[in-house]
Image 1 (tube, rainbow, N blue to C red):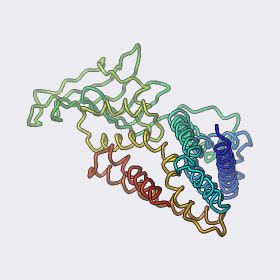
Image 2: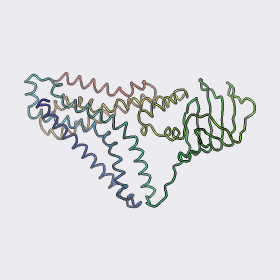
Image 3: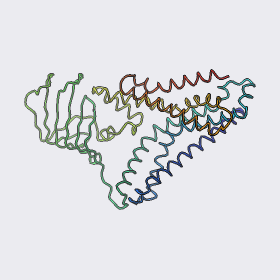
Image 4: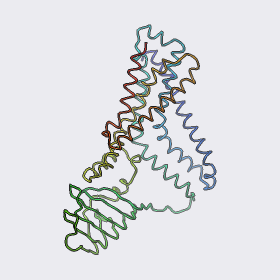
Length: 366
């Protein structure tokens, strides 16, 4: 590595990790002070609070990293410009991209790290964070026996064109209550309706109690008499783990789980749900690379700064650029979920626009 690359990279790394530390510290302090009365009221232990804020570390790293990359690159290049070092580098024959190479490589490394952390740790961190938050709000008592989780009003799309509506589901006990299953054909015509009072998962099979089955023709009219069975073994491929995982929000799923959910929904006819999930899926692949794209955007702005008040100017430019970036991204995602853009285009459009604008501004630099 060239001495010049090490010189630039040292400044970027120092400012980047300083930003990460400051943002984390400020978040914890502000959150503690704003919720201090609730913490004291529910007598939350130090161990529980430590677990709560530790669960936020992966989430904060993913959210803050792009802005920290932007601020570190803008400040570094603005300082080089302030000291006339950019002029010296350009006079020696170096192009803007050769000067910015260490920052771009660092941005790529951070982007890959964000992708790994967001898929591997963030979903579990969100679930753990919500769990601890619930314990704090309900009042944490050390000796209180742990209650089994119960899910109410669960609805989901399953394999074989089935729609499930369940009043009460207990993943630990592997039981359901108040079950309604709608079976459809490939054209989303209702073919069968199954109502059961209770279901138990045992030996890899679902056993329903007090089960009534209705069959329908193509016009939606009931065929023959309903069939009543006191107990019926149902051929349903979904396990209790499937029901528990598929009711999660997309942000609490990793990429593999979202892909699996989309595959399960692919024959259900739920076009709106599938479209929204595809936007979320493509966003998972593209958003981590915001760090390197936003560095490219910050370079021309930092080199166009005036030489006064470099530090404050860098912060101001970073805030404005970051705000515009995220507004544009939110608008594109909203348009994609409305169906006006294809999911892949909606997830990538803001990044394409920013990347094109960045390359154009860099090409216009003297």
